[in-house]
Length: 536
Image 1 (cartoon, one colour):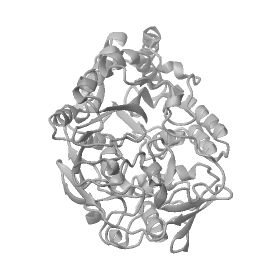
Image 2: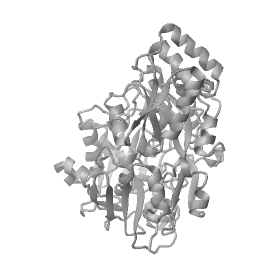
Image 3: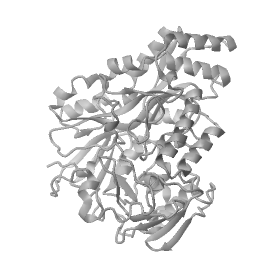
């Protein structure tokens, strides 16, 4: 699958201006919201799909990892959603409107209920968003643009108008604000959540098409259909089972054996045979994601000018095309920036992007300059989680670094994503690590702000640059999408110069499903549209 064609962009451009999303979907328009509703008839089977053990409980303010979002996507409804073509539709929102792009009026659809029967209303959102900021949870950063944002306090920019309506005042005009509202951090919470948030995080009351029945840690999460859900993602099956695997090969073998219904990642070992193995039930498409090597900028030998030289040298010592051909059977595209071709505004040839091109001679030159500053004490290590099928590409790039720079390099394996993420988050891991990012919502800003802004929770690199932060803010304030993209391009030039992370390739969806299910589709963030999967 070739991903270098802009015609394959996952997300459509969203028209900017006032009255965005005003009554753009209702119960009679659910086919476009789900991608392909197929027949309206439902099936009774429980659909199983592969996943991993979440590091965090099922709380919107802690949803900063794929493993937990892999459940919350189906348990939580949001104001808006994105279909398989990247088009935005209303889920809980009746409308999201603004006359100045600074103060937004959000009307919640009347009659919507949580799984416990209580109403979903303006308070459900105001209380949820305030709680995240008041408790300074990991995802509080997403509300930094709201007027009055201050960790530990409620958001002054949130105002209740009536039971179904509230307003959001931003610090500055932001034309793409509605795009964010499909991310799970903006999901509503019922009143019962605030009585015991710890218990709620283990078994939450649902606003989405499914409700958690049981979470057996390290094994599975089972979900029943939520009978109170009345939105565009009504379940066409009898429930879900999220199974936690320690190896993608094991999950794939279960799929081939008829013991798993949907797999979101085909292992590298099967990429060349998947079409034959699944007899046409494989799925390949572009994805709004990028994989990089992150390096904590406080790591010895990776600080200051020495570190800048070493990061550039390592980047240019890696032959991305060769790894993609030999490990991924040509299914990925070498990275040219920090965003993705699957998001509007991407373009090839940004100034400074040559640092992401294979150039072993230049790499040796830069490494020698770094050695003149201070001798490197190896080995160069790249940490990864072994349950995600990462060993092949990590070993490949380490061999390239070793061969092209003459530096000892090796992978450092962690048993699962949870343990790797914990080491990175707790700053106990000093050195390079697998840094994967999938868009929370379809915007270039989402690849930059939450990951590289100075105070962002997902900034695992100890990276701080005030000029970069300022350019992001300016981009958010632009009403013209092209003007915003120009600011983001300028911000990326700073990243390409300093390389807090080394982009490797853009992610692609390589998935599949068993003969027991039908109507399987994936959205651009890599998640299957499970509510529409049918199983007898």
